[in-house]
Length: 265
Image (cartoon, rainbow, N blue to C red; front, top):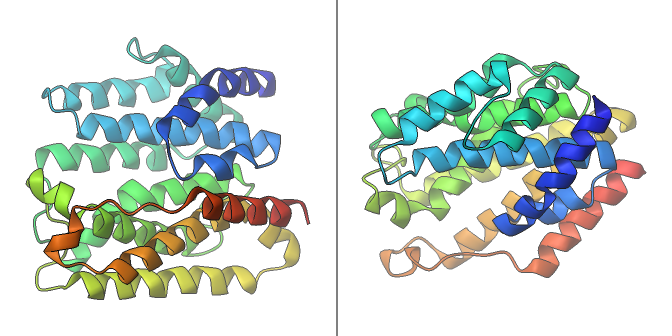
């Protein structure tokens, strides 16, 4: 099974590179087994998310195919990735509810997109599309589900809040508004920052061996914490919302290198 994952990850690595994701520098520098697993997991999440943004109207059908693929390993539109995800789930005994939650969050984007939700509604959505991913990353890093307590949920919400702030203008064009009713972007940014700090403080209280196992999750947090700082520095006035915010490549590599050192130390 390990050799299968290695082969799948090797076949999928160019796709990760082409994605342009800010995470790719981090993933490529991780120890081999974790690099292979996170390559597959990231591309699964990306493929599912792309279904929600399918302008042709076929997104729901594509998501249903992915639901079935979790049990069968078969997706005629993406056969290599489907087999890779199936092998990954079996190898690490990944919790099916977390894998399905990612799909369910994207289904909601199509059938019942959020529009000025309550804080509770937003958090439920974030727990699906991001908190579940945090749970899966920790499972791949050697932690049982829900361990460390509350970490995946807090990190997922912080990352998704940051995504929401980054994509305010783009989401508005799609008829979506994830910002809670009556909440200013600056308030959501403050809550994201608080959750990032909470996660890093929680990690710091763990034994060194457990901290080391959290290197990948910590790397994702540091990258998005940097993005949040850039967003706050730029501000959220309508005149600047349409200008994309990007973290310079050298800073992404710096975070990735720090994470690599942390994972081996």
